Image 1: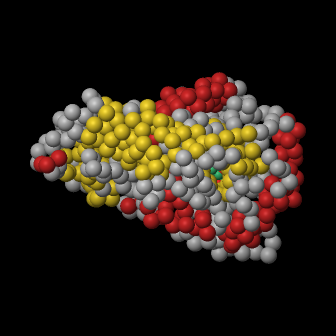
Image 2: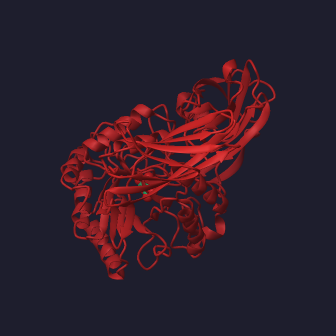
Length: 591
Ligand code: GCB
């Protein structure tokens, strides 16, 4: 599915703005056949939760109805018209003028529907029923329950994850046009040898066509290569590669000529190779060191909704600190962010919303821990999101690895059987054969972990001296070193990457002692980890948890959210930002 852009043959109409919102509750049913009763005003895109003030609205679980009206200029009516949602969290039913036109499950990937024949001249009414219910069949997972309060059924969700369950129409809603014969998708792959790059451009077309022409332009808009056909092969004689923090983007122009029209699409493409060789992670054949962050799409007021100024600022702050990479923890980020990362030269680990597939995470149990793989029914949702994520992001130079899951119970029997086919599926979907990983939790220890031979890179989330050996930096250091020595003895000949380690820190708290939550403790915590990392050559990077403080559900371990940010939620630096900057500016991107 292509990102919607204006081209010589395509027009995009953005339906962002103020929509109407109604919460569905007992006694307040919504029927899309009729216009929504006057409800709240809500900005789209954005999470609804932090735009409204009542507590029970912010935490509403169930259906949330959105509605807007729009008209299409008459001069566009002979085009093919497509309605496209960047994402709706977590599932959507879409109605046009009261008729159901499409449905989608999964809150972080785009979906679209052709509306050429359903759209009316004059005003159209677009209604979206959003559900924020999650359970053991969805991704992410949570425990769903219903309770009767004051004679009314109240829906509840207890999330298997540590971020607020923001919901709504999170990314732009766009109508775009194409000619009747149109480019459905483009897939780019390449091989680089010496100065030369051999670029394969596969075009997927719907409808009758005569001819496909592919032209590659450099950043100066000069034509550097041309090709013909649905499977075009182009040669760049003196290729300029996309490098971490030194991006270079070619534009692939695809023109599909049909008897009465031509469809044109422009795709930005960076040429870079990725390979895992022994315990090294190679980008453009050079051993790369990841410096950066686990992040969240989380900002004041927008919640998880697209916030482009914040995306721009975040990448600028990261650059200033000497960071070169981030992980889309714990779901695929917006297409706008992926395009920005391509442009800015950030290296991205692209992750699915399969976070904490772990049955013991959230439930009280007597005696033995429940086996996750007997409980979870997420296989279908997992396959779907992998397909949608890889299909959406396959052409991004910034994406160097796929993360199939974050912190699943890979120490539970059945994990191998669950993950092996998903890892194979991921590999089979990617035209660029990127490495595949699983991000492992604290229970995934050498000797207990059941899947690490299936993945290309072993990503570890570790909280020694925080959740374990709390505040004891000496004991934490020993535990971390001992674990790494155990892995070393296994002689896996694979790269290891730290994808999470961190300590909650409240901006402005200080102490001369090592007291958790103070800015000094956070500095000492990271110094301890880095001392240990530097002893092990198979560690190919460090991504701290988290770039910024972020909102979570309430709990005694959370002080108005998770405070492990290097920046607070307003993007103001904590003391640690300066220490990390010093370290990272002295570690080159390549060995
Ligand atoms: C983790 C999770 C992350 C949490 C973090 C924490 O292991 O992957 O989602 O936010 O720990 O701070 O507890």
